[in-house]
Image (tube, rainbow, N blue to C red; front, side):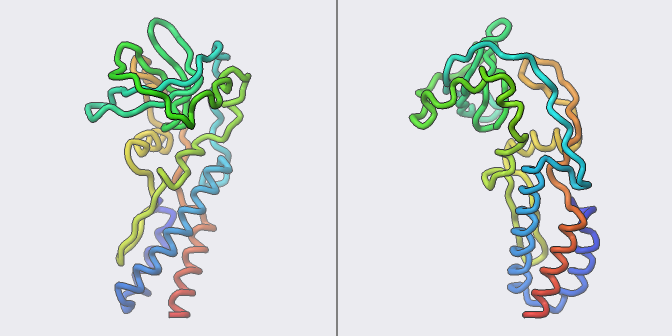
Amino acid sequence: MTDGLAEVERLAGALLRGVSAGQRRILMRKMARDLVISQRQRITAQRQPDGSAFAARKPKSQPVAGRGTACFLYPSGGGEPRRVIMKSFTWGTGRMMTGFDIEVGAIRSFDFDKIVKWLPVPEEHRNAGSSRLRRRGGLRRRAMFRRLATSRFLKTGTDDQGFWVGFSGKISQIADVHQRGLRDKPSLRAKAVPYPKRELLGATPADSERLLDLLYDHLANG
């Protein structure tokens, strides 16, 4: 996102040299809050920074009837096993389970034999939405990355020198695949496939203008 804000960075650096560290932090928080709101709105609208639409999802075949909700611990790349809450899971080939991973916000597949431990399904997820996968195109019509754009994953950080807007935790790896159009495995045993480039983070000209307005207003009123 830095390239789209180069002019803002240049002007801010020149204008803020004589401002106290405390005042710079206040301004950085304002700018970070404005930019993260803009990013969420753009992701929700399914638009790239240049205004074009995100590449559409690849059509998938209709899944078979679901089996409700499951909860279990599953290996997570060498770290501690993570809790998976999976809605409307189905059985694929072999012993693979496919369903809607609530934490990731997307359909994922899991090897039944690699499940570390089965857990009780949390009360709020019991019998909730178990038929969603059975509705033709129901999940497909939803906006992509809607969970990634929430404050749980899309965060900001500030100090008196600057600010950042980005994704946190393991979600940042998923976001990076889409941000740069990389290859990734849809499931552990699947082959890596290319994903279209969908720029989840990126400053637009309108973002730059608003941030400059915030900068000038802060200096004028300070």
